[in-house]
Image 1 (tube, rainbow, N blue to C red):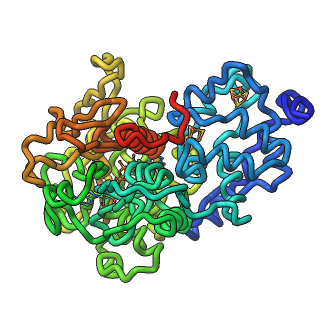
Image 2: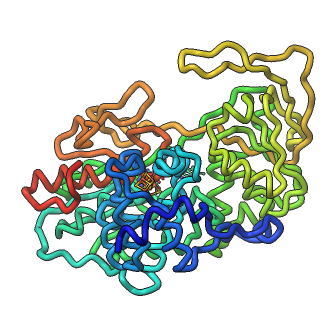
Image 3: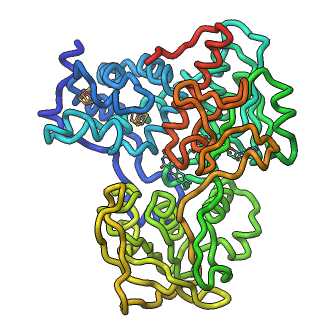
Length: 477
Ligand code: FAD
Ligand code: SF4
Ligand code: SF4
C-alpha cells in the first residue's frame, strides 16, 4: 500500500497550492496561497521517496516525523497524520505557513537535490492541520491527571505558548502573562495577515484556554506585576519575552515626523485587521494610504512592511537596502512576492539623512560591495559623489531588534545576560542562572524564527517535566 502511494516524484511534478493573483491579493490582508484540495495534497505527499535517512527531518528544528505524516497523507489517513504531526509541534499549521522551508526542511529534501523539485512539506503540513480543525479533530487538552505544581510563563509568543502546551499535556498548572491585550506575540501583532491570518493564531489560543491554560493579559511584568511576585507564585518560571527594542539609526533628521519604526507600523496594521479602533492609523500617522513610502532594511520585517504599505494603498513603495539581492537576509520568496505586488527594490543604497521636519525625502548614498568581512559577507562601501534624494512621505525603519534590559527592568541583576543583552540559558534545558527560571525563544537567541521558539518552549517544558518526574510526551532526540 505504502509503496503504491509513494515515490511519485518522477511522474508527478512539484505543485504549490494556487497563489492568488497580485492584483487581487493587493486588495486585502488575506493569505496569498489557497489550500490544497485533498486529492492534490495526497498526490504531492506521494512524491516523497521515504528516505531511510530523511534529511528533511534532520533539518527541521522540531525534527518532525515528516516522512511518516507524508505517507499517511498520501494514503488518505489524515487524522493519523495530524496526531503524528502535533506530537512534536504545538502549531504545525503555523509553521506550515511561515517557516522559511527553503532554508530548512524543503531545502534539504533529496528530491530537490536531485533536480525534481522538493516535496512541498510546508503546504502539506498546513493542509493536515487545517483539515484537522475543520473536521473537529483538534481537541482541547485533557490531561490524564492534574498535577499540583504550577509554572508561570512570561510572554505569550510561540516560545511561551509551546511551553504552555507541552506542560499542560502532562497536567501541570500553567499561567501565561503578557503585556499585550491578545496572546500570540509576534504571530499576532508582528507578522501580517497575508502570511498568517489572525484567526489561525486565535483558534490556537482558544484551544489552550479551553485546555486549562490561564492567560493574564495586559500585564507588563516589571510594571504591573514584579518578576519577584511571579517567582513567588509559581514553582517554575519561563521567560519568553522576545526582542522588541528597535535598532536605531544615527543620521541627520532622524527626529522627522513621518519616520517610524517597523514594529509600531506593523502592530497598528495588525490591530486594524482585528477591527480595533486605532487612532494612530485613523489619523494617518501610521497609515501608508496615498503616500510615497520608503522602507529601510533587507530582512523579513522590511518585506512585511513593504507589502503592508502596498495593501494600505501607498502611491509608491520602495525598499532601500545597502547590499544587493544575493546578499540580503530576507527570504527570496518574499522578495519575489513583493515585486509581483509592485514593490521596487533599490539595492546598494543606504540612508545618509532625512529631509524635512515632516519627512520629504531620504538622502541616499550609493554603495558597492567590497571585501568579505569576518563573517564572509562582502562589506558595503560608499561610492563617493553618487548621493541622491529619494522622495518620501512615510519612511519605515526596519533595521532589526535588540533585547530590552531585563535585569534592570525587572530589578533582578542576578539574571545573567550576554553582552548583547540576550538572557543566558543552557542550550538544551534552557535553565538560566536563577533557580527554577528558564528562558526560551528570541530573548535567548536574538531575533530568530517561530519554529525555533517552539523548539525551545518544548525543550524547556521537557526539562521541567523531568524535574517533576512527570512523563515527557515528546520522543527525546
Ligand atoms: P514573541 O513572539 O516576540 O513573543 C513575546 C511576547 O512576550 C509578546 O507577546 C510580548 O508582548 C511579551 N512580553 C514582552 N515583554 C513582556 C513583559 N515585560 N511582560 C509581559 N509580557 C511581555 N518568523 C518565522 O518563522 N517566519 C516568519 O515569516 C516571520 N516573520 C516575521 C515578521 C516580523 C515583522 C517579525 C518582527 C518577526 C518575524 N518572525 C518570523 C520572527 C518570529 O516572529 C519570532 O522569532 C518569534 O515570534 C519569537 O517568539 P518568542 O516567543 O520568543 O517571542
Ligand atoms: Fe518544515 Fe517548519 Fe514544518 Fe519543520 S516545522 S517540517 S521546518 S515547515
Ligand atoms: Fe521525503 Fe524529501 Fe524527506 Fe526524503 S528528504 S523523506 S524525499 S520529504
